[in-house]
Length: 157
Image (cartoon, rainbow, N blue to C red):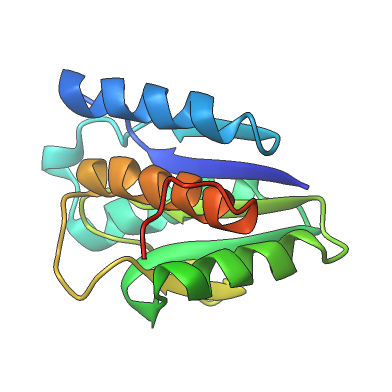
């Protein structure tokens, strides 16, 4: 099964981009993996936030396929421990879907229409992080989950 990280807008901070590149390369050793970046909404300062969210939501929905397992990263979603997440990932990769698509929305969050399509809403923490920082944090956790599944020594407990 392929894993896709779908995100809105480019990563602007060089240190975050470097970390993303590092963990992406590590993840590819375990699974087919790609990051897809949908462009930001142009002239966003002149567009009300709900309209921006709606337009971003349309882009996300247009990217998705019927046989995707959709996971939205959402601060109000389900929280897992590292072992719970790795167990969930292992089970989910065994189902009859072609891709697990993890979605990180833009600065204002994700449109309700996309949230309603989600198979899972996943929270990394009850704390709030920037949408760009979440990219790096999520990839580190995804890599960590694969090392737990394989019994490798990256995760200490």
